[in-house]
Length: 257
Length: 358
Image (cartoon, rainbow over all chains, first blue to last red; front, side):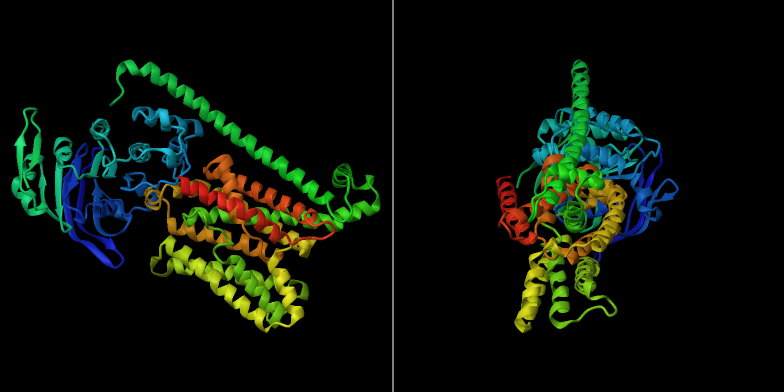
């Protein structure tokens, strides 16, 4: 635990299309939340998949002294958790069964019996206020509920690096805050959370580091105050906008045109 | 956290309630499996008792457990004539249904089955080549040449699907389309064989294509039972991974599953199960589709239960179809493939309508 994440010289992409070349993001501290922001097709989801090694990757993704790229898929899955952007809608498994499957499929702790596995799954359901829908098939859930269930499937494995692809895109305001608070708490235990977000206000409010991606390159990165600027919004998003400081100390973006 | 302190006692009570409901659900699944097993056994006995001479149910049971206590004639009818058919029906139902369940999962398509993806059509072509052109594996006895050919073609067709999956990483949707293309191609080639066949050979091939248990014998039962017995444990070993695959390919990968490898070995199991079954009994439609769907409705999608349930529903439907094939037209044995298709089509339509409503 408490190890730093450094991505060095990362090249990644799809069989016929290389997206990233010699990409670097360094010094992500344990406990940090990183938000990947940027326009559509900037490479945010691809970067997330690269870190999870779900696509072809070369280079170094170092957590402490371990290069995650060189680990076996199974060993990597014990360190890196991933929540995809889209969830399947036709799955008859219940929310609880999905969590138990997540724990059982490549056991994190081989000594766990089914009772312990069940307890772990129920703990996460309780923590995320999902007990009411625990026995509902995923196919019966609303978009927002399905997204919460999907997040639970990633969190239940307690990965040291949690990768989330638009975890709040289907959630109402209240649930956005719930999820963000939960993510914050998860990170505060010494884990690293990297998430793709489209909502810049949300990203500014909750992330420790913002990484602005444009055309698969880093445009800028750092604290929200340094990164979210009218110039960035104009150059990267092509919008005229103001960035105001709210009385509560957070940034607020107001789009003019 | 959205959970405040005053919520905690309520939440604990709710958790306990849900835990109990889940435990009940699991025991209900076991009950369903046991009930299915009993239904299979009853249907199996019914299958043995029906035929040109209707045997008493009690005689069947006696002959099964204490063969010496029934008349010699009855014992011979049961053990030599009807038993291989009845056992074959159960085994074919199991093999095709399990193959269908595996295929639906790895192709992420509820309509996939060995029948819809060309395995049966390939077997028909293999059988046709043996029956009409006499082309077959050298040194195989007359008794086995049609089945041998059918097996090789059916097995080959799944390997072809497999090769396509590897070829430039074609996705599962492409694979399903390719399977459908295979069905049409093989059907066209079988039609070509029909065109050039002599009337006698044609009749033989048409009959083969209808799918029939009448070709069963103890040797074939033995081969199929060995294949089914060997494959089932491997399917069960993969059940967690297969369940995880239902949550999505990327998700499964992030759980540490090598999805390509999982698909490859599943395809291999499917090839053995469906090719062996189809090569012995001909084209039996829809079991591979209907069996897993009935099982899913009864037991859900947790593959630890869904696979055994599919085995049993497949066996049950096939065994009942075998009974129906003897009773539908008094005095005649309607090919069982015809019966399964006739049963299968309404179920198929129901599934489509149900899916449409969703």
